[in-house]
Image (cartoon, rainbow, N blue to C red; front, top):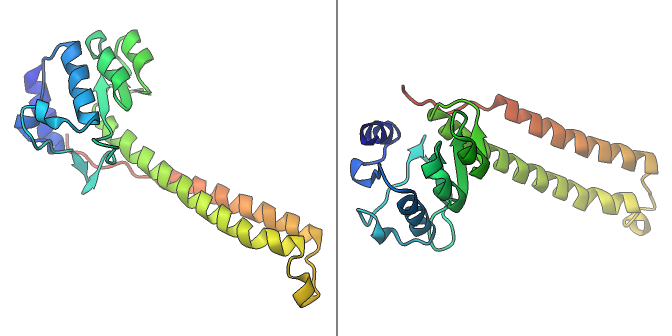
Length: 190
């Protein structure tokens, strides 16, 4: 109910005036679409504050509005789960809510939403970093292995070294990805 919504909002730093609770499914979907399209004037306040954890926004800005995540667990949340950019269902929710969501949290602990969003951001940063290093490495290594500098240096890298270099590149990306195991979820008071 409304009391639980206020308690959670206080926990993550959302002002009470920006909390909407006890709404019909169509109203929830309308609010999600309004946020996505940047039309927040249809909400109770013109300035909608996004919750932040450790000083960083949970979701990036979208085109014309915000990227919207919606968390729900019941039949009345299904429409909004589908309309949101990221629909998050709680594990103990109804089957239809779980089917409608993009992500299902195995526990029904609302604090896991912050962990999910934080881990998703860390994973995307790691993917981009891996892509950058693999692209940079291959931009340098492939011309050397192909003998582009042979006319200048009169030295050609043996194919064995090219194969070893590619293995090293893959191992570096793998080790970088394994670094995600060091992920620490955000601390949220109970």
